Amino acid sequence: MKLEPLKPSLFYHFYNRGNNKENIFIKDDNYVYFLSLIKKHIIPIAEIYSYCLLPNHFHLIIKIKDENLLSDKQKNKIYQPFSNLFNAYTKAFNKKYNRTGSLFQKHPKRIIIDSDEYLKNLIIYVNTNSSHHSIADYNTYKHSSFQALISSIPTLLKRDDVIELFDSVENFKYILEFKKQNLETIIDLLFE
Image (cartoon, rainbow, N blue to C red; front, side, top):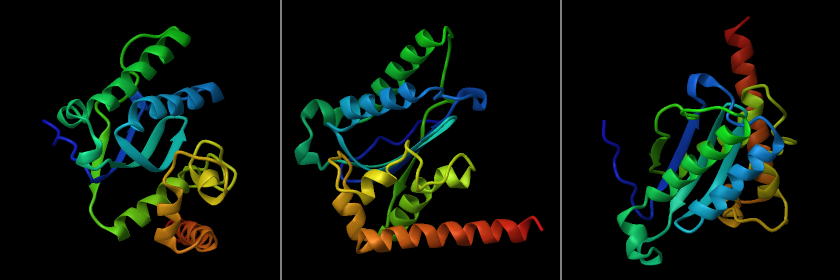
């Protein structure tokens, strides 16, 4: 099945997991390297709204830059930087851990985000994903965008745009905690 080409000015949810559900991040420097590749390959053609890197999968919420901000080469091959990111990471990971073959399960999945409500719900989901998978409390998990979004530290994230969607940092934190608690309550009720 051929994937739809990526289009300028659209929001996307990118996600993928390790081949055979294997870990794609083993040590802290793996996470750091993956983020450095995002900076190198993705930031020139897209804006990052949120991310979460978990041991065996990742989520990215991005917006492809407007057409007038892309070079002709970038416009013609918007997907190429993503391919470069995943290929570079796979090669480095395979070399470091003495392995061969595919690291990721098929092509990364990508879904167009077509409304502010959907965007907000995905931002909540992505930033609380470490709690959802019982890996770590999202408030303290260091491999997601949450800490950068609620702080004033310099970031390449579109922090102001994200916070504007939720009206304030305080409201953003409140909504994430509220949604997390409701999700836990629903899960508890389902498995009683």
